[in-house]
Amino acid sequence: MELLFSIVLGCLTTSGVYLMLRGRTFPVVVGLTLLSYAINYFLFAMGRLHTDKAPIIGTSESYADPLPQALVLTAIVISFAMTAFSLILALRLRADSGTDHADGREDDA
Image 1 (tube, helix red, strand yellow):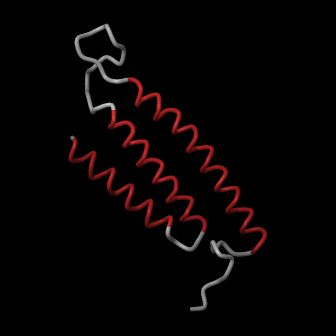
Image 2: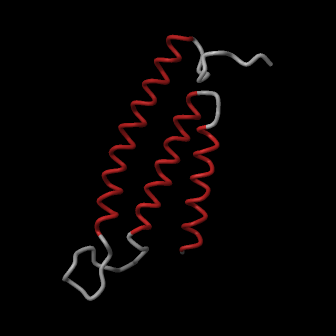
Image 3: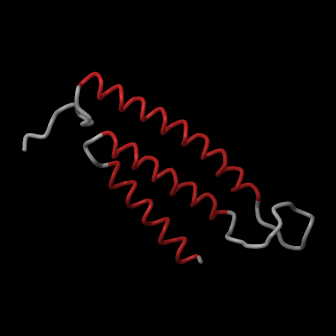
């Protein structure tokens, strides 16, 4: 399970960074979203990967750490707001400049 988790985390990070380095605004927004998913998975893995463990301390011998779950929930809300803000900025750039290139210039080719 840890190997699969690591592969998914690496793929999300690689795809996010690749898309963020693109010249157009929509792939940058999608890359930012993928990178935020990768960070959320990383934070979630910080609390160890357990199955069938109670999230509350004191009810059983072993428990899952609830702090990373709370951090991930907060990060999901913040990343949703950042994605919406980035999307609005991209739409505004498209409306003002007529192109979706990050620098406002079309390709010469």
